[in-house]
Image 1 (cartoon, one colour):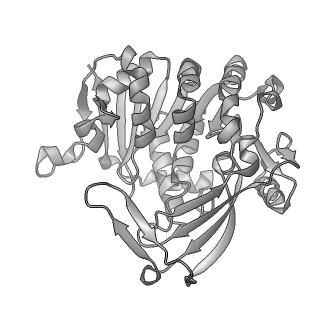
Image 2: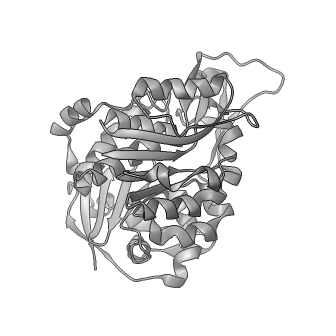
Length: 371
């Protein structure tokens, strides 16, 4: 299978701080937590390391390790950080012919500060990632591709999203998209108009909630009926996945998960992947929904987990895997990434993933039909 990723490339500098050297504050009346730095003081770091990251780069590496023929369109600066990106592509066997180099902006960089629960605060200088133009993405880039995988487009680059999706669809490839929350917020109408051209869409729960005001006018009604249960231990209510029980809400608008999936599928999406952090992922199609619990692992870093999950799921699905098998593989690959501090070291080779799948425990998964 041939695939191409489009989106961000960064150099990530990750600082691991021991809990005793940094304070963490959690709000009682909200879900937010904060790391507190004392101004004017140096903070001792356990380690500071540099890695290559970014949505398009993470996805390209993920799929290359699964054995797929990969290309990538990213925009980088004419600098050492940009060379780091192309070096990773060379090492992983990813075609870098479509990488765009500009002298007008630096390669994107981020600083991640990780402590306590290892859910890092990330400082981002997006640089060249914000400079991708529509005229730089052409139809020939997608010729012969089976999958076009579009990640978050930063800043002014987000204006190119409708153009990229349209070209990708015209090529005959399957179109997968994993936009960021700023893209949904600042260019929501452009995104909404492109929905019918996207085959596989992935958003986290916060991003998904942002869609609710946009799709309510087209709302469909449906209930989720469990056909394959989780392990029934104790109170039945304890076995109900969080978003099945609570639905989605944003800005005073609410929607049940059944209604949401029925509506988004009716708008043209073939497969919708809704990730909900450490709980797991919900995958909706016209046939129903499949929920898969996340694997419990020692968390070293959460950055890149979503990229690992969706790139694995989308590529294997397009390559012919079932929803269930693709979800199980994605869960394993995502868990492996969470076990590392960076976004790529944990990405598994196809052979390793196949071995792990033989002993995969799917008792944390449940199938629902839409009625």
